[in-house]
Amino acid sequence: MHRPRKEMIAETRAKLIAAARHAFGTIGYAEASMDDFTASAGLTRGALYHHFGDKKGLLQAVIAEIDGEMAVRVNEVASKAPTRWQHFVDECTTYIEMALEPEIQRIMFRDGPAVLGDPAQWPNASACTASMTNHLTRLQEEGEVVPELDPETTSRLINGASSQAAQRIANSTDPEATSKKAITAFKQLLEGLRKKP
Amino acid sequence: MHRPRKEMIAETRAKLIAAARHAFGTIGYAEASMDDFTASAGLTRGALYHHFGDKKGLLQAVIAEIDGEMAVRVNEVASKAPTRWQHFVDECTTYIEMALEPEIQRIMFRDGPAVLGDPAQWPNASACTASMTNHLTRLQEEGEVVPELDPETTSRLINGASSQAAQRIANSTDPEATSKKAITAFKQLLEGLRKKP
DNA sequence: TCAATTGGCATACGAGGCGTATGTGAGTAG
DNA sequence: CTACTCACATACGCCTCGTATGCCAATTGA
Image (cartoon, rainbow over all chains, first blue to last red; front, side):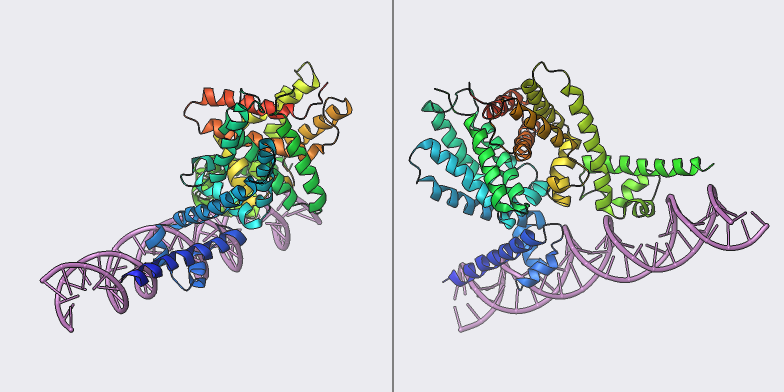
């Protein structure tokens, strides 16, 4: 029976990721002391270096976890819209909603790109943009969206706009009103992708 | 005569900003050692702390300088388009072109937001988005753009898309082709803002 | 069951970066 | 000419990171 051993290791990894995720998501990557947040998980930096190599490696693991969760949430929304176009729009607005959460905003959109570089180059992450790219391609095949666009490029631009929208809402003094404005503007931009009858 | 004194001070500030700008733009903010780049300017950290308070303060000064230069370049392009709509589109593509420069990309779009937070909250910067907001407002008045949009929000979203476009081009193995794709997709998004006849 | 070995994790150490407190010398005012 | 201001340098301590090393429990093979 070699389960307990494996389980302990998995638990250690999970505890480190959870502690780091909390620290990165609140005080930020640069301010997060490895001694501090490993101690808050009842461990030391020794465990961290053993499992993740360095601080960046741990950040990558945290990002992979969050990205997985985001993909799940996008896919949940994905199956409830009447038309494919509506489906696509819902996906985008879900993305904005997720980007409203401070932890996601901080880790995925601020510290992550600053420390690891362009998200498009991340090996594991970006599961949700892949989904958007997929939908765009199908919408083109169905003649709903203008054909001369590169789907992946387009979905990246949309991601950029989404995260700006989310930041604007999050930093607003009146999130309700700002949210309406941002979503309106965002949907209007998306209209540009549709074929006119 | 108290000019020489003032001039020496201004020169010191300029040297520090230049050295920091180079260091931040190449190896990045986090990796840039204050001892190193102040020494490369023939100074020490003493001067830095005296003039800018801390490392963040210096970054702010660097950003203010770059933002000023960007605004100038946007305004230069601003006066050469036949229609106001074209003018607006040119402004956006100029923005993308500037974002292609590694120094601007790194400082303004990666390290800057990570260290100082949402650019929309920066006190001095964002002169160029102000210009875009201005044009959007006029385009609405002229009936060229749909009226239900908030101009500033919209220009922020466009900024987000622009910087993504730029990053995509910059990290591409075939910048020429990627540039075409990105600009096409970007213009298509902008079309969504126009009133249909 | 027992020895050998693996490997998960902690401890110890050194290097470097930051911020502050303090020193110094040149310019400036009265 | 004296005293003060202020731009900038120097010196010190703290914190954080990365590595090298050590220890102990779990696993494996006989």
